[in-house]
Length: 397
Image 1 (tube, rainbow, N blue to C red):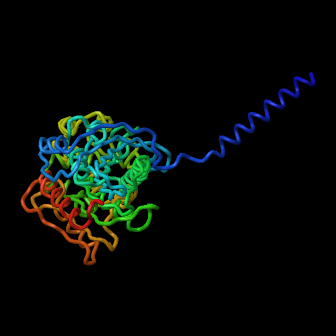
Image 2 (image 1 turned 120 degrees about the vertical axis):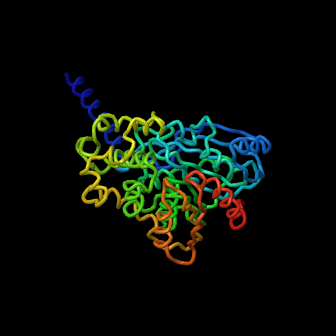
Image 3 (image 1 turned 180 degrees about the vertical axis):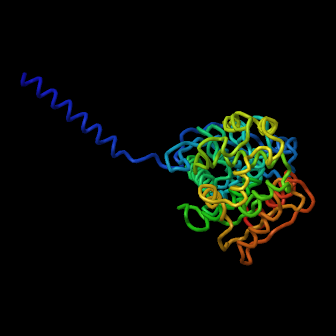
């Protein structure tokens, strides 16, 4: 009996010690690489052919090796999670690489994200184009897209920043394995939702909120920087094309409900029959075309009158959700900021960029009006200009 009691005591002590050890284990490090998957390994001529076939004509100075990185990051509530992103590295002899963070535009389909895209969509090719010019290029898929678990928090500035910053950390680890290093001052650009994400990331980098990294220059394209005063009102009053407005509003409302609890039941925000299906349409496995054709043709037919009033004059949770993602332009840059937008854009109206430029103030911010072109046309014009500016003022190595 004594021997049995002694054994039981030993077991209890061991279990307690094991429990204490688990309790005090440090949380996983943000930016820690979970897996690295080679995607592309191209010499210069094949890189040029890839870009040309995708409609991108920018200089190709070297071959490119591209990888999908899955890495540790956080959810909008601060809990540990993982995300994926594309990293494209130049085939050069440079040991110190300047990095470009490219932030992609609106997408609802997980498999369209840059690191998992198999169709060579523009966001992947633009990332490759920066690497082909000699930069280390990163393109976060954001949370919930690519191989990231869960759903995507659409146009949510804090998680756009955390996913982007943690991919920069993961990229630094990747290049260190190759006995290379990143220049800590990042060049940041992005299109559409990515313009918003780029501005949010640039603000965070400039404030010192991302240890180990700063910002060298910022070039956002056609971002919805002012949800309260421009993007939401324009989506409701017809300045935004109806299909784009329906996609933007339904994506944003369902995403923000998961973070800020805008409604208890979808019928509070969406009219029937759309209320019964709107949330499942944003599970990451439906295309934008499927979503738009499954919902009402206009915002007025999609949203309940009460929610239209809430969106026009936000209070409570709706106001908190807007406030959390607005304000990306409320800072004074000490580095060059070139904003790009077009008066002909009927997806993200030009006043977004005007308001952003005014909010930034200072002599380092400029706004380039690309004229009477549509939303997609702004990126086609701006990306080559931005790459040329980066090469001239901030050479890759």
